Image (cartoon, rainbow, N blue to C red):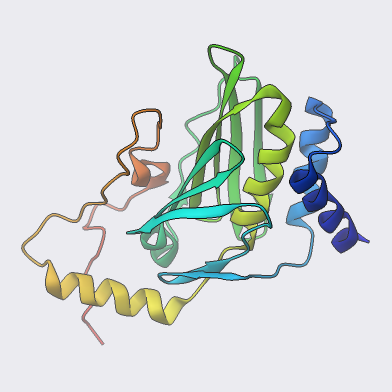
Length: 213
């Protein structure tokens, strides 16, 4: 039944035939998606995930991805470093003035959704969940559609521990004397920044002593 609902949800997103748009539905969308069976159809560096029909990938580099549906740009960052070290999520974004805020706790997958009202009837959606983050600007009439897409993608992320460890080791050896940085996409509209600040870092280096066996 839940799988059928997800397929129905995706079909609504793709066809645009139904607009429900109510804050009461946001919790239903989130709860239904995180409790449903997961599948994947897209691979990236150290992880794979499900990209819903109708969503196109226009940029994929250094754990940064830019997705697009209709005229809405969706920015995603997958923090494999924090996943590998199981860093704790820093819940510092709760704001009573938010249009919508919800913490999510689904076994080992934790995070939150925050939606704030911006100018010109636009809303800024920030979803931090399952060691990844999605941010985008969305009109009010599309909030439910984009929330559904966001949660389907983030909840479906499946990490490859062995590959991530190898990637981190390779990066360690190639940049021992360099500062470890992540470049953000060049987009003036995006608030997609300070990626690692979502997670509580340990006092030692982000990549400590990986070469030890």
